[in-house]
Length: 245
Image 1 (cartoon, helix red, strand yellow):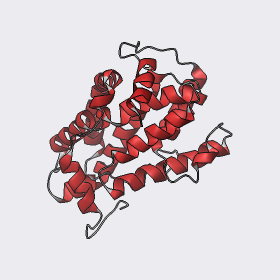
Image 2: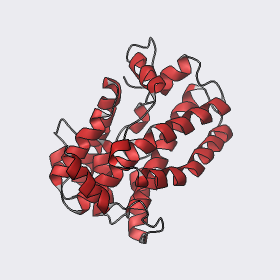
Image 3: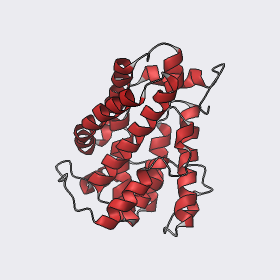
């Protein structure tokens, strides 16, 4: 991907863009469908390294679970997934397929382990199949592509459903948080009330992280989570697993 391509997309996603973009009832319902745990793309099957983090004793209770997720959100998800999703939203809005492919490659290149790359590709293909089944223009070609990500197809669905950027970013971040809390509920385990407290706290942090992600320059995209990368790599050979490797 060329720096010029990223800069051009960045100008289409100004860092001072308003948060409260118009969201029609139809678009809201479509966004809720995209972020629902019932969406059949298999996100529940992955822990993104959480299973090994629990095994290693990094997460043992509600406070450590919250600290781990807030760190992952601020130092990883909001510095890679959200800014790339913002650029993907702009690229799909402009039907700029070369930019979409370049951004997809950038996101895959940011995955530190085979396991995380495999997860992203499987979720992306599953969402592509679902969107193709619903007649979403541009989705079917991604069903068989080797290079595909969840964010790529989420951005496509958001654009085709007229979901504005701010809403798409908040929704994407919340579905990540909900999936992570769901995984921890089974691993730690967290009780239902504790899990909801953790989810509420992470959700409260999302708006600020979305604003930061929208202002992030191209040269700053990248995660700083070596511990999570190591946990994900170790998870590939973990003796017993609830989640996919």
